[in-house]
Amino acid sequence: ARLRALRAEDTIYALSSGRGVAGVAVVRVSGPLAAPALERLTGKKPPEVRRASLRSLRAPGTGELLDEALVLRFEAPKSFTGEDVVELHCHGGRATVDGVLEALDGVEGLRAAERGEFTRRAYAAGKLGLTEVEGLADLLMATTPTQRRQALAQAGGALEKRYESWRSTLRSCRARAEALVDFGDDVEGDLSAEEGSKARTEMDSQLNALIGELRRALTDGYRGEAIREGVRVVLAGAPNAGKSSLLNALAQRDAAIISDVPGTTRDVLEVSLPLGGLPCVLFDTAGLRDASDVIEREGVRRARNVVEGSHVVVFVVDAAKIDEGADAAALEAVGGALSADPRPELVICANKMDLVEKDALPRRRAALVDAAPAAIAPLVAAAPLVAATSLDEAGVAALAADLEARVAARFREAGDEYEAPAITRERHRGHVERCRAGLERILADPYLEPELVAEELRAATDDLGAVVGAVDTEAVLDVLFADFCIGK
Ligand code: GDP
Ligand code: ZN
Image (cartoon, rainbow, N blue to C red):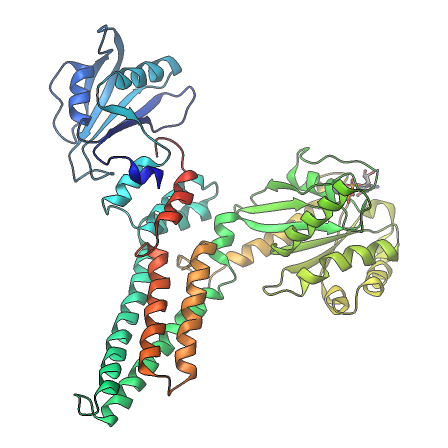
């Protein structure tokens, strides 16, 4: 809301490339004074639009030479923000960038841009839709090829198009529903009873098809969200089973504190770990058991939350030590998450295999099944069992391969062609879910009052509209742009 209050006619500037030493740094200026500001810094008429030109940049007060830079000029509305834009491609050193920014600050009418303000202006000018802005935000954060592909598709409008086509279906349903309302008001109206029921039937079949599409989007295994945020893999299990050691071996670096005092990993620790090039986040949890001290109890509570939001749970056991009490307590803690919907995949990892013979495994599994609460014992009995030794990287190769296959399976698609998921954020999911529920309420009752049908359709349309930013966008924008960096 604060940003919205800023006058759109302000001319803003910011460093748009990353901070730090670089070959080239790009400073962007946007607003009506962009070209005059360039004139002030160069002492020359601005170059032709969209033509790169070499210019000397000088401090407006002293005339001191700041840099020889490549400058570019765009004219409204054909620019990223839809306003007049100037780009200064300077040398990337700190002092150069600081000097140029300071020079721009000295030009009257210019001010430093707020976080995400360039993109916000592009959005306000209708250059980008809401899901496209979100895609752009994701693109800036993308670290794996899969994330890049998804973000690029979304930034390019793939999602916008999908939602717009759903919205257009709903619009046509609403037209039919309006006709039914008119019919209900006036028996002598334009529609005969037969025509009325035909309109309802046609609308129902349209709704049916749409609900099918929404359902497919909703049950895609959270692929879009998983690509965006990474597949969440949680290491759970009794204290001292070797979770932190496994995480270290998997991450091939010392990310976790390892100790043989039970309960040392009090908090949840996460490591971003691309598995086979796919984004994955690995969590190490505090030993799941009834902790006595307060800090540790908080750790256990957080650990449970993480397990609940995860895609894969690796339940780690000490292969050399059978302690049914500890196993039972840890299984009890993850039991709820394992029976939730959607249910995370369960993998049992028998760790410390250097201490036992391989043929000890069946007995260890049997002991674990015995310790499991009745509700999840069948899951534990059926879960794949992977042996590991977390003392070195080779000892976790089998576990890494198993996880890699699981992560890959989440992204595998029916065809070869990449199809962007319809839902990439929880925000979208909530709206699509509500939209589907509303439409199902209509279908469930063939005699629903036409006014109520119209009302449900209106609400459903609003929900899809909220995804693309047709309604209620301010709060979403505030959250979104808070995550943007300055200069974006
Ligand atoms: P956590 O409480 O489950 O996180 O367990 P830790 O990773 O802190 O390990 C507990 C103890 O078991 C430490 O002393 C580790 O050195 C030891 N340990 C972990 N993995 C192995 C293993 O594969 N083999 C052996 N022999 N010891 C291990
Ligand atoms: Zn630990």
